[in-house]
Image 1: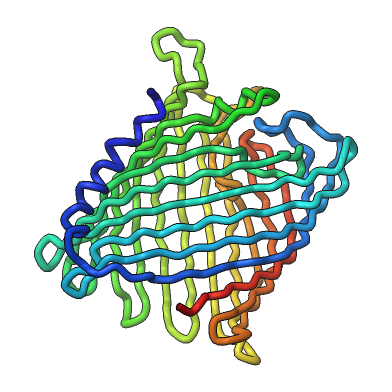
Image 2 (image 1 turned 180 degrees about the vertical axis):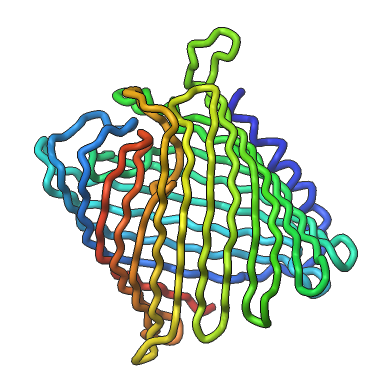
Length: 374
């Protein structure tokens, strides 16, 4: 029955969507087909919750090919968007080298389906409901240092409210619930320790600084429950976390786009192992370059400190870049009316599911994006 906890959130979204589905015009918003090839190097022979074996190498490399597609439909009524359905999915195939036991050829499938509905409340407020279904499947998952997040299924639902406070100021309120179930193999049952139920609330205030510059202040809280992680305390037997985050983001949009942000996070728990404080500073700039190119640069530095030293595993679920430091440089250029390319050099230092264990990855990527014309 635990897999049915997501039903109330999606029910809210679907009920909000019913009035708009009765009448309106549906159109394709966008469709992008992507393909790419990259060369990646990995360092860090660490523990991971999902690997059936542990290799002895500290350094590995891989050639990665990928194919994917994303797009969506919008429903308009009386000239305004009332609902949106978006999808994003693809597959990556790795040809890995450098391992001692054998060569690996993992394949990773990912897919996301988002439904969002919008309901105006007078002339100064917009109520939205959203639901998300996301999944990942991994074949031949390799040991470290080539880290691939384990397979899982996630369902999320929530509501948001945007208020026009006048003078270009906006207030955003969002609440969401989420259920994540990880797929454990016969040889790695410990992956189930990452299963969780999660709830969050966030408030944001956006202030205009000029016609093309704005600042957003935000704060939020999170509650999580891990039904597979025991605390060994009879009165409080399962792990429960509570977290807080707050930050500010400055955005300038013009011939050049620039974003700067700072976010602080805390996590407290009835289990001391995963308690931490972290601070992330990030920045991004995108600008026109020579020969009709677009140059982009992004960097994020995260400092994270756990409150307690422990020899036991700190199981922290999340995507690969959760609480990560990373940087990339990219060059994009249109090749035809509906075809463009990107070459990117990137670096990542991130945690595995075992908190406080970090691996590093560097890679050179080439991507092609094609937008079919119908």
